[in-house]
Amino acid sequence: MRTLLALLLAPVASFAAEPKIILEEKFDRELSKDWFWGLGTWSAKDGVLRGFESGARRHGPVKVHKLPLKDGIVEADFRLIGKASFAGIIFNGSQERGHICHLVMTTKELRILAHPKKGENKELAKVPALLPTETWHHVRIVFNGDKLEATVDDQVIRAAAPCIAEEKLTFGLGGDSGGPTGEQAGALEFRRLRVTSTTP
Image (cartoon, rainbow, N blue to C red; front, side):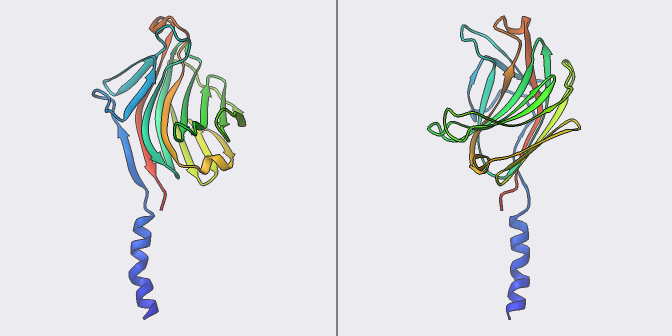
């Protein structure tokens, strides 16, 4: 009887652990309300999300999306245009918690930053990389418990920290687009965004 019960339950457990796509953005239409906050000017057109710094506030462009995630995979293509120096993907907790972790992808290196508590920054890892501007690059971020592994083109960076295991409630796409003169300076572009949950 126990053997029969185990056989009956096994497929259910296996199915529950299957990866599930929870977000897939084609950027071929106006952004949904789940993209709820941002800095700079952003537009989605012809399969590309494009952002650049604008306005009086000196801060690179960032666009934030609501999406609860613990373990999972985040994938996208990105491109640095003009004087843009880096693209980043940042993961946040609640408004009270603030940032959790951040992957920074510059023209010369990759960095993983952790935020063990609100207002605290800690660099967990840094590796050299070659990411020329005007070229599409692919990023794949894997969250597994307290571990984060990111692959950008063929370069891999890994880190671990307790805060990485926290539930991420939002994430942001952004970086430095080259300065406050808007598109004259540069822009950040993203496409083919997909988020898969692997939490059982």
